[in-house]
Length: 289
Ligand SMILES: NC(=O)c1ccc[n+]([C@@H]2O[C@H](COP(=O)([O-])OP(=O)(O)OC[C@H]3O[C@@H](n4cnc5c(N)ncnc54)[C@H](OP(=O)(O)O)[C@@H]3O)[C@@H](O)[C@H]2O)c1
Image 1 (cartoon, rainbow, N blue to C red):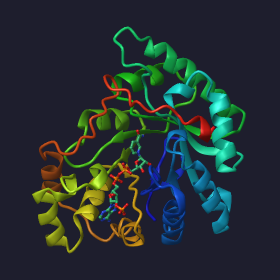
Image 2: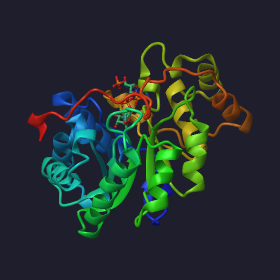
Image 3: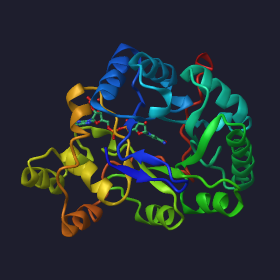
């Protein structure tokens, strides 16, 4: 598969596999299909409760650990003690190290007087020490808008290699993506299909017309658009057909005008969670610790 080069020189496959809600027997089957289809970069988080199944399926595949990239994240209620959070993730994944470790969300309360800058730096500083201890290969961020990211970049010793943001046609966050790129941080698109319901991004007329033009599906046009913008998508799929189709996007390219049209689409399916104002309600499940 084509790769993106991270700021530390690591090559990352251009498409990863998202594991949110990939649980139970169906989850195992989906991850098994993804490995068989050729995915080697997997996104999980302590919040998703999919670290165990991901670790088990990677071991079952027999693929050497060093040939797989595992990205996981610590949740808001774990930010006080990143070392303990990482130990739990490593235990669930059944691995000695994670390839990319991210802070999942930049703010813990969303209240105006929250000292989030200091708190993010404390958490990130401890995560830097986890890199030095060899338990984490590199650091990343998730849902960090330019002002959150600048706080880290201005004060860190180890640069974050990636920032995961909600990105898809109809929610392309051009300002945040440009800031990431100017600073050598790879933008990764979460919910690259806007989670794919019937009112979703992929039902948009521009996408469906382009799909007809190229003999592809709207989902494939969507992924091609993100790749051409220099963004790494991490689609989730449960059907083996979707899993395979989402890798079959490297044999065509959109014109500059088409990319511009998709960039300028009206807003669709923003999932409604703004990093400054909305803190997702979930706490990590103690049963999953
Ligand atoms: N950092 C964060 O805060 C954050 C937040 C949300 C998500 N994420 C990450 O991003 C990943 C992806 O986002 P997501 O799971 O929210 O949603 P998504 O990838 O945008 O959409 C998943 C939906 O699209 C459908 N789909 C996938 N491929 C398809 C295809 N080729 N044709 C038709 N339908 C297709 C899936 O259907 P089937 O399942 O039926 O195949 C599923 O219903 C997550 O799994 C997670 O790893 C991160």
